[in-house]
Amino acid sequence: MAAQAALLALDVAALEAHTERQAQLCQQLGAIAEDPGSARILAQPQECLDLEADPRWAALLEEFDRVQSDVRHQSRVHAALLSRARRSMALLVNVLASCSGSYSIMKSAEGPSSAMALRK
Image (cartoon, rainbow, N blue to C red; front, side, top):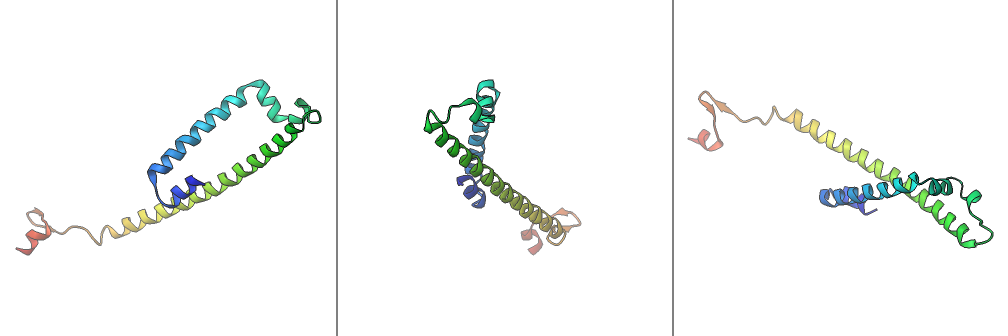
């Protein structure tokens, strides 16, 4: 959620920091997923864990499902915000491109001149 606030506030430094943190978390999750034992437990926890023997496993799995759902939701929200920012930037680029001819610097026969030179 902090990354979303940084995006909405156009805080580039904070957004870069959050992006770096996200990359670190993705690397850590990738390392867990590459471990065959962990990957098997995450894919089929009911078959790998004795949920009846220790009720904490069931609570952990419920929390894991909730976190997964929240991450999916936050990813969709963040993607929508990035898409909106991309459209806004494209709009600004188009506006600037269409106005560039209207606000070009006047040039004299000798070459470029400043507003002060034009006053003389």
